[in-house]
Length: 631
Image 1 (cartoon, rainbow, N blue to C red):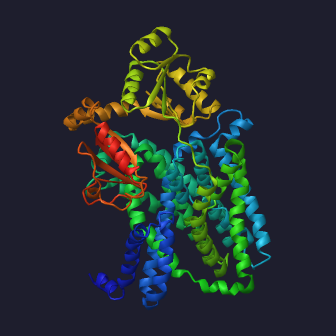
Image 2: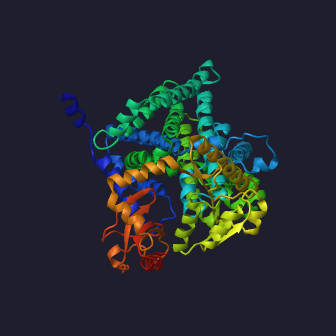
Image 3: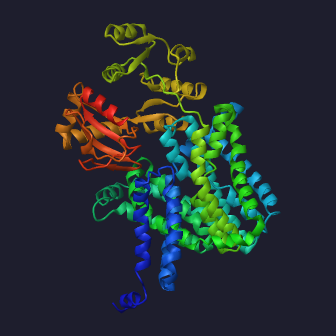
């Protein structure tokens, strides 16, 4: 009790109140001002700078020290979530398994992303040497490392908004950003250690973090298979216990605490590897856990970090650059774009020159990692306060400018012909075609067995007599990039060959297959196929029949009358209105609203915003009216 009272005697809650108020106010202010193109963290830095200069000069040193600790924790949390965001399965699936040719190299996102990163490193180092002629630099190599960063947090929302997140083009851009993130963090950690301590044998100890990663990974995979652990984890994952969240925080702190022994500059790598480890554990189940950790990180710790960046930002140091200020800032901005755009020309052979340049502009956006690298460099005196201030300024500019330039340069994707192609004429395929016909979607069934083909035609379905393994089939169907292809033949081996043909020869992204086993699921993941887990689907169906029988039967048995549909809000006239302000059809209702990564149950006073994904239930007439109102 005496310890608590002694803490209260010198700790002032007012600065923390101001920080939390800014974090709460920022998204509200941006929503009211309709500043959706500007990342929230940019506004947090700006508001932190404004408020910090007014109020924080009066804060006690002890209070500021605690705020700095919370900000550093937010920084570690950000690196942890960056590792958790990476889909380990997708990275593993992109590893080359056959002899490389030029075509296979260009179609492999991991290899192209790695090549872009290496070229960026070379260009950055050469550019850093040139820029050092304009202003003095304590360490040219470290300044070059600052320029190689990118921002996955900016890239993903832009691609989602354009509907390109699942396309081959979008996946190429995301993989390039992920590779840059991973390798940048590793380079920062090793370089900072060497620049601070020199080439000492202790540098090999950093490899101990990677050894720890593989030990935890191997042990965790074994522990997950223990029935008792699986049962306890499931029972304690909700309500008061939140065992999965506590376990995630334990992993984060284990890696931070152990990496701290090697030096403060290595903690960045430790936090990132902790997130990567958790991502490899959770796989498909990580979405809910990620939502909870996002709530902790982006709800409190991470905003504190960015607001404190604004508080500590001192633009007056830029005056030390004197007459070279504007020339240096201009050259610095051009360089930040050039070192990303020039390597992105590798994509021109696949997507054309214009889309390659647009992708280069998008991966030129930089935010958290460049600010973090600059902060570490400033603390270790590898860069000057002037350069640190310039880096923060450039991060703000690129985050605002890059998405705008990408949208201006990249051609808008044409609306594809709404056609579903089903390979294989099984009873499942016929039922799927019938249900899509109720949605008004054109469906074609491809069946090579002449008897079954005639039976499908007699049922009034559109079918063609052809072999799904033959490229000519898809040429005759005039396969478009936006057409979904569902592979449903009775032979698993034949399904795999068809999927490989579609992915490798036609470079088609919209392919769905059924995976009756984990081995087949891994095979499909390796070639980039969306899969349906039969066992999980059956278990979910049985679960709904037992726990929610009325709802299940209502949805299944009344499909012809009522159905569920997803509608994206694109109508600007609806933006900001409440649900009660829109005259929806009496036979339709809004069930859920997905905004970013959060799901909300709509009420009469719920506000709708552009980009929201609305899940609606109703008759076809009602759904048509809802589509008209919202999109």
